[in-house]
Length: 324
Image (spheres, one colour):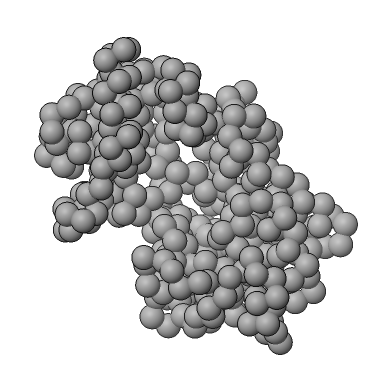
């Protein structure tokens, strides 16, 4: 297969790029060449901005691909441009949506691909829902070969799941308490990007997946108290946890609050039976305890990576002082 990744060097897509190449896929990356992650050896790189319609069309002129994956489409106008650019030229188009698109709060668990979509709290999720609607219409009306993939919280060694990323870890290491939304007992799913890649690469060129939607997540359930404790212990400390209601956090920091009320504040359990049925090799096996060790090694290897958000650090002190 000849496959185009628009992006391909991000947190999730980097592992998918490497695994696709390992499977013998001819991989072409279209990006601006500005990622901190270098493209994998063996991939052909085309430098262009997909949002520059003329420039992207020029670079892609005359080329055909079996599959196109847009890792960086977030709004309906971006997806509409992709449909116009690739209609009639590809066998499959994969849109990277988000599990945040599922209704919040979920009316029932576990979440399946038939769980209704709807998220009134988070613009990011609302835009992803609108993109899905556009692709579903294109598939029904003129057989545009769309597949929708909904990652949940997927990470690599560079990505701490704690609030403010290294900011919370720095507080732990200084012996300061850290803020956890709610009472810390809501369940969450963290998926290592190498586990995700197995399910995802199995969908590439899979004609049965056209017209379908999938989420791809780990089967490991953790509470937020457990997540912060695992991070702390990987760093060699026992964290001090302070619980603050999510709506209180949202009043003090709307951006942080949107990601909580629109996603992380709600318990999730994902039923992965559909992706396992389409991709029998998908069997996530990397627990977050191992992932946390990889994350810690990456941050500790270079002090320049240990960036603290001073504004957020001060906000945590304020929240703890008022509500802790």
